[in-house]
Amino acid sequence: MRKIFISDVSHELKTPIALIQGYSEGLLENVNTEEESRKFYAEVILDETNKMDKLVKQLLELMKLEYGKREFEDKKFNIVELEKEVVRKSQVMLEEKQIEIKFKTPEEINTFADDFYIEQVVSNYITNAIKHVKEVKGEKYIQIENEVNVEKNKVRVKVFNTGDKIAEEDIARIWNRFYKADQSRNREDGGTGIGLSFVKAIMSNYGNVYGVINKENGVEFYLELDLNI
Image 1 (cartoon, rainbow, N blue to C red):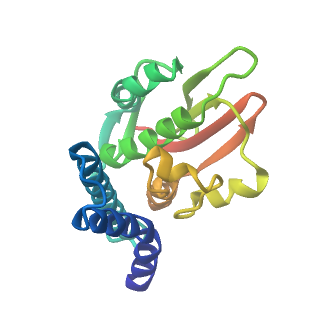
Image 2: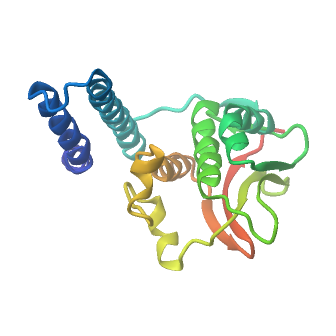
């Protein structure tokens, strides 16, 4: 576990460390004496430092999840309320990209799990959908659907976005730490590249299914939770 952590951190911190080193040397050597440029250098250093801090914390949490070192505090909660709260927090991004949100669900579906971790899963799915949504045949939207199966005592949560399909060779790989179907995407959007790894680790702890399906006009990510009726 320690070896994997060190390997992952070493690989992922190369770029931010190089940027911090370069901009720090620029400040020390007075490469640019303009106050505005010096402020920009300092802002880059601070931004990259924050990214490193976020990455290390997320990696530590992911390792605990993957190796069963994290205990869940399961309780009854309404998954629909949780989804709507995640959407509310994402409102600025939704408005910026002019994305329509559709809900296809009953008003109340009580589930039994750790709502803190399930919120991370749902948030990852919705954030992912926002990043990749595109207009298809005049439509551009994200749909959140909850499909209840009382016989199996499960609810399937589906997050769909219009846009490009995921290449078949990437479908299994996107759940791996730091796998990037688009090699340039994560640094541009501020992501750490481990969001879907969190989903995999959390859902594996619960023994519930999760996955992704290519649809005619986009992509659907899904997960199942235990009902609490």
